[in-house]
Each structure stands twice: as C-alpha cells, then as structure tokens.
Amino acid sequence: MEQQWIDEQVARRIVHPRAKDTYKGSFGHVLVIGGNAQYGGAGIMSAGAAVHAGAGLVTLATRPVNNTALHTRYPEVMATDFTELDTLAPLIQSATVIVIGPGLGVDEQAATTLSFTLQRVTDEQTLIIDGSALTLLAGQEKIHWPKGHLILTPHVVEFARLSHLAVTAQTPSQIQAFADTLPKSAVLVHKSARTQLYVPHQQTYWQNTSGNPGMATGGTGDTLTGVIAAFVAQFGFSEETVAAAVFTHSAVADQLAQYQYVVLPTMVIDHLSEYMHQLSEPK
Ligand SMILES: NC(=O)C1=CN([C@@H]2O[C@H](COP(=O)(O)OP(=O)(O)OC[C@H]3O[C@@H](n4cnc5c(N)ncnc54)[C@H](O)[C@@H]3O)[C@@H](O)[C@H]2O)[C@@H](O)CC1
Ligand SMILES: Nc1ncnc2c1ncn2[C@@H]1O[C@H](COP(=O)(O)OP(=O)(O)O)[C@@H](O)[C@H]1O
Ligand SMILES: [Mg+2]
Image (tube, rainbow, N blue to C red; front, side, top):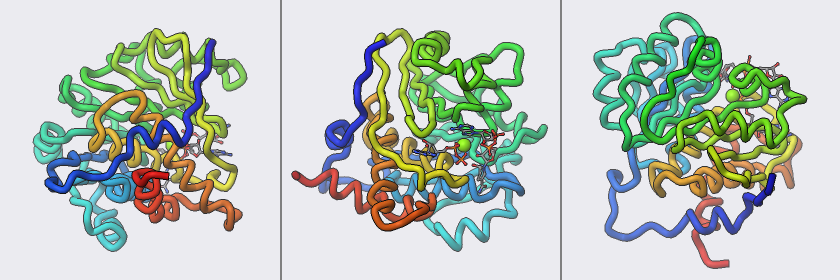
C-alpha cells in the first residue's frame, strides 16, 4: 500500500483565521456522550478538548455525579444525563458532531444509550465512535453502522475486538481490508505510537508524523475525540480535517515534551488554542 504523511502542511491547510462576522453558531455544536460514574474524566476531557479546539457549543451527556467536576474545570460545557433519553433525543437532533464512547462503560445503560443514538444520527451529521462504544459494538453479532459521516478511533486492542485481527496482524493491508467493510463516508483512525488513518477503498493510507511517548497516559485518546469533533464542527467533515486534528493533538504534545517527561491530556487541552493560532498565522 502507498503511504502519505500527516504533517504540519495538512494542518495548515485546514486551520485558518476566523472570519470577523461569525458567532458561536458558526462553529458547530458538539455533543459528547460519555463519562459514567467510574470514568467521568473521559467525558470531561473529550468535552473540554472540544471547547479548547474551537467548537461553538459543547454539551456533555454524562452521569450527574460528574457535573460539579465538569463545571469546575470547563463551565463552558452544558451538561445532561446520558440515561435521560427524552432529554437526549433533541440534543442528538441538533448536534453537528456527536462523540460517543469515552468513558461510557459497557453496562446495560451504556448499551441502551448507544443504540438510541445510532438510530437517530442523520446523513448530515458526523458521529465519532470511541472507547467503550467500540467495545460494545464489537460484541454485537453484526454491526449496523449508522447513517452520516462516521469516524472510528480505536486503539489497537479496540481494533482487535472489532476486526478480530490480533495486534501483530494489524498491517496496513489488513487494516485497509477492514476499512473497506465500513460505509463509504467513514474514516478509520487506527491509534498507536504510529497513528494511521484509513478511508474505505483507497490505495493510500495516512501516517501521522507527530506524537511522543510522553502521551502514554489514560485520557489522551479521550482528548483526541474532542479535538476531532471540534475540527469537523468548524472546518467541515473530510479525511483531511480528521488528519489535521490527529496531527494537531500530537503536535501540541510534542511541543510540551520538549520540556516535560510526561504530557498530560489536560495539558494538551490547555495548549490547543495557542497552537491552532500558530497554525492559522503565516509562517
Ligand atoms: N480518566 C478516565 O476517565 C479514563 C477513562 N478511560 C475510558 O475507559 C474505558 C476503557 O478503555 P481502556 O482503553 O482503558 O480499556 P480497554 O479494555 O478498551 O483496553 C485496554 C487494553 O488495551 C491495551 N492497549 C491500548 N493501546 C495499546 C497499544 N498501543 N499497544 C498495546 N496495547 C494497547 C491496554 O494496555 C489494555 O490492555 C473507555 O471508555 C475509555 O474512554 C480511559 O481512557 C482511561 C482514562
Ligand atoms: N508512545 C506514543 N507515541 C505517540 N502517541 C501515543 C503514544 N502512546 C499513546 N499515544 C497516543 O495516545 C492516545 C491513546 O489513546 P487511547 O488508548 O484511546 O487512550 P485513552 O482511552 O486512555 O484516552 C492515541 O492518540 C495514541 O496515538
Ligand atoms: Mg481510548
């Protein structure tokens, strides 16, 4: 298979200065569905990353036990309970981009919310499926992928559950063969120390050039979902938008790793907007 690089040029093509005559509605509404009682931080980091990467509006559908922590850290984020399906339905309907899975868990409530959401996503929306939602789907006999633009963000073990390919068997041609089974408007982000991006029925996959081992802390992938969501909400769905988000997330971490041994996900969130400003300015 051919390979193309995800580098700063890609991110610079996507992240541009904002037009003067804009408002919060110009930059999309991100709905994150995740964060149960055990994994509250995952939902908070995904939603926080979406705010800091520039989404106009962000709502987190989480468990209420997480609300105080959420609003202490990110008061910009609106909150609701992901088990209150009557309240969730109109939020799903009005979202530009939906993230489902970070810290969602795999219990019955999580499974109910997942199938409720999958049934309601429309052609115009983008759905990012991550973490627990991927694990839940992998447990189904046959996966019915939803309508709309689809972005899957598995790490290698989540990908093994989905594809039944052992980690050592996850070569580019095998990953592409799995990607070819997805709906045509799908992007597969295969996460690892060498994150790659696949699109159904393409001969070329994308290889990220940013990232470092300081990122190996729980929550880094949860944070990535929020960055991808905000990029799609502002700049529109395309494989290049997803590639730009993947690059930006790790490039921020690379800048921090010049001075730090460990790069925490929340530190990446704090520096996203500064880095996006750099990307949007001429060099
Ligand atoms: N602060 C929080 O609330 C956190 C919540 N999290 C959530 O916890 C849930 C479970 O996710 P997990 O990923 O922890 O658990 P999983 O059971 O899905 O996968 C964990 C396994 O995958 C392995 N793995 C991951 N990347 C690998 C790689 N590149 N090479 C080899 N092995 C690799 C891990 O070592 C581990 O054995 C998800 O919903 C996730 O979003 C985690 O993101 C951790 C932080
Ligand atoms: N050694 C590494 N080099 C580059 N990127 C890494 C490294 N370790 C982890 N990452 C990145 O961190 C993220 C981990 O995602 P994931 O395993 O889903 O984390 P979590 O679910 O805990 O948030 C991925 O984006 C992955 O590319
Ligand atoms: Mg994860």
